[in-house]
Amino acid sequence: MTRRIKLGLVLAAALAVALAAAAGAVAHGKAGGTLVFAGAADPVILDGPLVSDGESLRPIDQMFEGLVGLKHGSTTVIPLLATSWKASKNGLTWTFALRKGVKFQDGTPFNSAAVCFNFSRWYHFPGPLQTDAVTYYWNTVFGGFANPAPGSPGPDKSLYRGCKAVGQNSVRIFLNRRSSSFIGALALTNFGIASPTALTKYKADAGTVDSNGVFHPTGTFGTQHPIGTGPFKLGSWRVGESLTLLRNAGYWGVKAKLDKVIIRPISDNAARLQALQSGEINGYDLVDPADIGTIRSNKSLKLLSRPSFNVGYVGINQKLAPMSNPLVRQAVAYGLDRKSVVTSFYGGRGVVANQFLPTQLVGFAHSGVPNYPYDPTKSKQLLQQAGLSLPVAIDFWYPTNVSRPYMPDPKRNAEAFGASLEKSGFKVTFHSAPWRPDYLGSVQSGKAQLYLLGWTGDFGDPANFLNVHFGAPNNQFGFNNAALFSLLARADAETDLAKRTKLYEQASILVMKFLPMVPYVHSSPALALQQKVKGYVPSPVSLEPFSTVFYGT
Image (cartoon, rainbow, N blue to C red; front, side, top):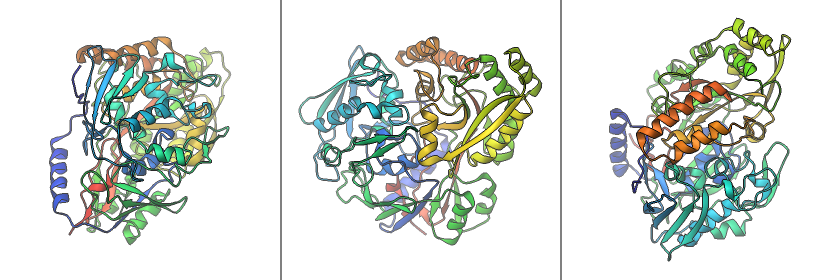
């Protein structure tokens, strides 16, 4: 096993050149100023392990850092709070040398005890926080808790076994099994190291979880006092209005150029564009493909593109009848006019997906993948073969007040898919809910039968797509497939690249045979900025540091 694992996704030469140019510009850029950036929704909470959505992770990524991170603009793993790491021969013990002289934003020293405190917190989350809807990433990456609640996985299912401080500046993390994706997973913003003092003082884990799987904190760590080691710290957060980040003058690394970043939630695509045109904001994410021409024609504005590293899909919950029947799931797949949706609503920035993995990842299957072209007649035949009377009533969920990189306008996608399903033997009843806080919680807790969702990769490894979603029982898909779970576990444990590739190709094919969801698009999202905003480097994982941004001419 190599000392440092360099994961997937080779950058295009143009992106590498742009990154180098941006880095050089930052070195000579003018410091100071305020950037006003528009997101599509409010964060859920400012506590990495308790969220899974990009709107929450954007500000969290500015305030917190993990042991490792990603090189700007890429999925290459680099040192962050750890300066180096290596694995034991059996791959079960990882030793990390920690960066010295780092302090949390509240003055608490960063050291080995702080690292182990965080891992222990995650592993010992109380029962209400152990659900997929709350601690999604711990569940999908590490998969077990020290004291499992009824229905939650226990220590025997966990990748994580323990953490030991070795002096002040070194830790050992013990695993129960080999994992080729472990280092990449640690680059997730969700596993940023928080101040033990603040976690305790502000009662990070105190609160209740409602019937939709939404965490309502009674402590104030995740709402008022999120304390990490990052280049920015929280100034204020007024839900529905703005979240303000302030430059951390005591940051251990290269200081942020900006004095302040204000993130405003603007859910409507047209309103975000109008705010940029008027100068009310300086930039925004998730540009509606229909607005690209307008932005390009404005000399004071510019477009940046992210590499395509996502998937949009129609999820299928097999616990909600009749979706347990594979014939019905196949009927859904044939009943979705995916090509028309991608052609109509992505402005030439999307391609029809035939499997879950993006094309550039190891494990993308170039042959043998089941094909489900739009075929209403085939769909009706499969439903009748399943013993059902037409039309078959189904519930279709979509989120409101949000745009996502893989889904710029959820309502239009849902309505188009609903129309094609109605032609294919189904009777569709739509349901919708705001992204914050209800939609994700409802979907991840298993309440939605058919639903729109998607995924932007967090690091360049197939495990981040396939193992995260299909490597263990998952409430949002409602299935238990021992063969698939075993195959994905073998793939993640395999260190020989050729063998690993074949295993993930097999898994890609098996997922499309089993159909826990129907993928429909891989998109290349666009960002819009004022021309004077410099140093913004688009990331494949949709989390860009504001610390490199400055104003230029």
